[in-house]
Length: 255
Ligand SMILES: [Zn+2]
Image 1 (cartoon, protein in one colour):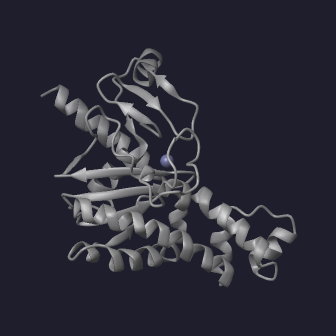
Image 2: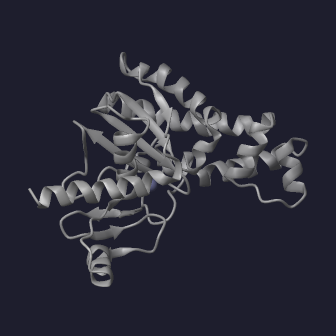
């Protein structure tokens, strides 16, 4: 299973979640109790990273960074061909790396400020979209707002894809913020590839081009050339990765 929470790998606990009311939930044992089946638990972005590593955009890469961008930003690392989970299974929460010292309070249960999650997630895209709609009432986004339509990440994406300059400007802002974080990840891990998935990646290069520009400008040589690619498994990445996790862990148990 993939859960959007920090995980205690040995105990099968969902320790805490930024965007869900979860605390020390013994999720593995609860599922075993109800199904009678062997169950393995990991962070949702970790299993998405595993799926992209085995079957998707990071196939063949020994070292890869994956972000899943939706309500929040999940992070998964493949290092030396394996998921990197930190000391107990809670790593790697790449969405909660700060990119602004005195930035806004992070969302949900994160005590941080200026995290990339709060500045470049789908939630941030909607928030910046609403602000842009208010300040540019003549734009397509502004007209949507005047009609009483909800300005969320999806509405900003559609408006930008239809050529609305205001919506494109929102992507430039949010994509640049994302790129600041990606430049750091590139510098730290020197991955062969950075893969971006989650609902927001439907915007494709609208989001990734400004991010790539920041990585080219900010990361050290040769990390400034790190390819930044769209995930290829879409919303199935979590399921495929969870299945792959179960297979791998069962094989380990059976020696
Ligand atoms: Zn945070």
